[in-house]
Length: 428
Ligand SMILES: [Zn+2]
Image (tube, rainbow, N blue to C red; front, side, top):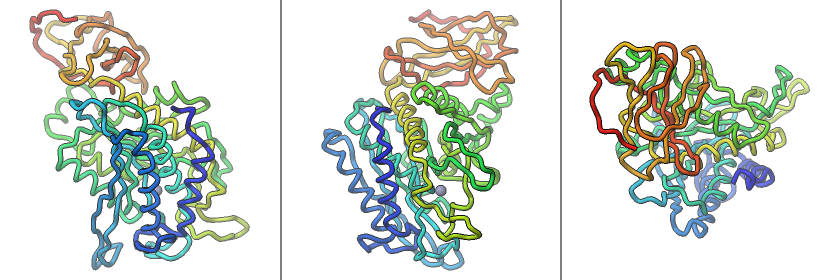
């Protein structure tokens, strides 16, 4: 599937988005060729083309919400639409959802300038182009878990489209195992620093979660789990899978939720307690972002399509595709994962339960690393649901993944402490 990603199609998608002149949240909603309404209608129709190949499993919908009012950044009420394509999983008992998101809106310099050219080729035409390419390639695939492709609006005025979706997901109790926000994945050079690199991409992930109950906080403190939250595990997973499938791409994990003091469409999902990360180019170009195209002091400003590195977008699309395909094909995570601490010993006994839903794992990976290391260092395959390793739990961190017969791993579970030794019937 990664090899089916077309650089030419990605470029066509970006150029088509730019052709709407502006995708500002207050721009025209009913002009067929200009403004945000033309953009969401086009994205919807592109997604709908894949319904036949999905044998009816792909459903494409608008999700409407109203924002703005007196004294707000948008000074009057505006009804906006997100475009949501849901590729229903092939296993009816599988309630897992994987979300891949980008934002459709663009902006110029001034917050309320809804008429100037605002191409938004990289920000975030690159993310939307990637999503359209993934819907095209993945709709004919058979994945047990459900994949939701979101093109959200309202981002540039306060993440409104994503907030709406995160609140809906919380209300409806969605079992979201991962949310990947793609915002700016196509710029590889900076005119400010003269850096140029399309072989490296950033994944931002929160450490201590934005949403944490007292119970979660106490477990975190007890297990020193501040670097092992769910978003961090997802970031490590993306790094491993992307580098397995995509050539000439190194994933740099940034251990913060977003850029310094800033946020993105994954943040409302984190706030609601979901596992969400941001994927973003390594070098941003501030001569281009949120600028009206013009030559200023000999420098071409503006987020124009000719400055997007489509080979880089292709690789970053592959990162997303490989990650969500692996996750959607993997078994559920192991349940009740714990470290037995009944008696003092220099070995470590891990115990867990097989997932109660979905496909039966062929086995499990035990992941290990020294406590000061950012990445897992050892990966040990085991069958059964208990293992004792000759490594001290005082000196290492451990994680557990389910793995299918075809080798697709679930996300990693960071085991909590199990105080008592309980005698249990051995299982296979
Ligand atoms: Zn953006």
